[in-house]
Length: 144
Length: 144
DNA sequence: ATTGATGCAAAAGATTTGCAAACTG
DNA sequence: CAGTTTGCAAATCTTTTGCATCAAT
Image 1 (tube, rainbow over the protein chains, first blue to last red):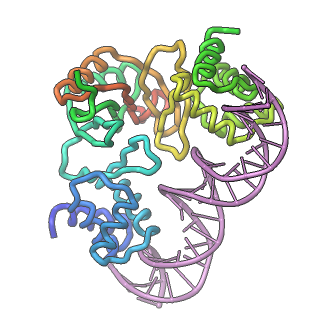
Image 2: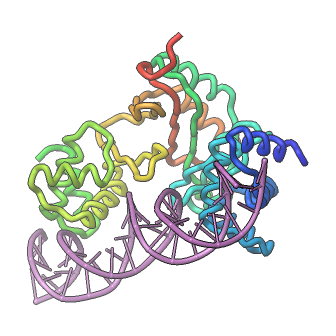
Image 3: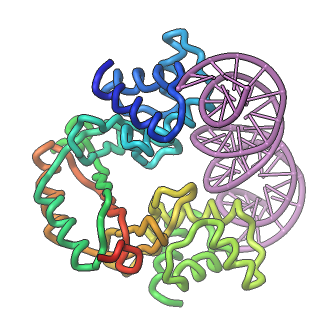
């Protein structure tokens, strides 16, 4: 059992919940993928592996994983939420190509520091943040 | 007719569309409010003024207003979208209190500049962005 | 007169929920 | 065995859409 699985085990038990086979399978699938995915994507991935898990369980588990900070959700302007696993990964922000949908991850410590500073000026205590840059990626930008 | 109404008139006609009474009323309501609102809020506001406009028309007009950059939509993590009018207002970002839901607007030119810089480094051309800081506002933050 | 817009109700898409049956600790 | 969780289907919520009628140019 790896680090993430151990942490999940502790998290689940700590809440007085049970570690079911569905939860284990969902956790594994989520951390196996290195892409951003929707609940429906996950449903598809699991069923491709011949694992029949209901959408209800997927949604419930996704919420659980988000609550435990194993996952983070990301709104890219489309109808449904995108998820990405965060455990063991450094925080980052996103550039989102409005033409092809490509997601680019980036990180800038100076921006992070300035956010903190702006918050303090308003007496605000930041617990998390989301920065999204919308535009055209290298491949889609107008040439010239 | 004020500036915004004129601009809307030009925008609508420019697209070969018609300036209906519903569109005028919605525009007025949207710019009268200085709060963030959902489609449903707007529906309620209009009906309080005894103006019966269908939800379908509200949604259609909200999309039109967003397309014309009269409005901007904001996802605060809840189910439905929040809107705010932008015409004649400077760009700003938001702090969102996860306890009371309060929205605080702020602006930091240094952050904006760093975003541009980060984008260039990735060959990305930014057309718009969204920065949200989640946390506790002055009234809700744990004292100590 | 034309062409676009409205309102209604139905449809759609994502997510949640009630409940009986199945599983975990 | 008690208490959770699952799967199903039905329900919910927000937003979109088809269509007949109505209004703007």
